Image (cartoon, helix red, strand yellow):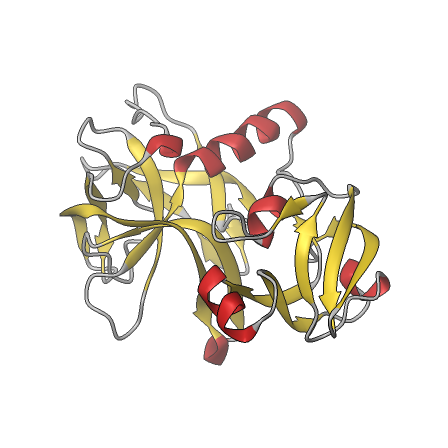
Amino acid sequence: VSQNNVTYKVITKDNKEYDVVEINRDPNNDIAVLRIDAKGLKPVELGDSSNLKVGQFVMAIGTALGEFRHTVTTGVVSGLGRGITAGSAFEGYVERLDNVIQTDAAINPGNSGGPLLNSAGQVIGINVAVANGAQNIGFAIPINVFKDSLTQFKSTGSFPAKPFLGVRYQAIDQKTAVMNNIPQGAYVIEVVGESPASDAGVEVDDIIIKMDEIALDDKTSLSDIIAKKKVGDKIDLEIWRDGETIKTSVTLSEVES
């Protein structure tokens, strides 16, 4: 398959090359499914990323720096449920990835797309990004995110659309809320024009304190709730604005590519 004058190949560990004949992208989760014509390949086992624990052993495999193939590094799960902005504004793209796995297994440019494995050799994540200017802070997409997307792809032939509210926010934790005499929730920094949030009257400096009667606190974030919704779902918002509580509803739209 050739896209934008680029030809894609898959190279296995024994240096056999296979032309990619089909590419299906899921830009919402920064993953893709490639199809090749091959027989006798042994697939890796996909694990379960829902029961990961901070401190458990992991291994990362990839082509470090785009040069050192089959590089294996080891470490632990350093954090769970992280939200990151990946990409480079200077190169013209950035994307928001929520609920990613943080690990101190060395991940370098070129490792992206490689597996993050547990001690049983099961894939529990897909390496996706590294924190610039830091030591051993890498991130991986939980494998359950991919499994959910793949299930829909197999049944419908397309990846699920990602629901979109249209706000950029900063979470207010309990300590900050108490110190500033404000409620916990999602402090709205920016409202995207012509978005569901804009249509519903959400404003900058609002604090979204509840979604569908679920309180936003240290355990439940706005992105956690949105991730469980679908495009077209109508949700109720409870907003704190200038000391008053306002209730409104919003219909989630699809993220534009």
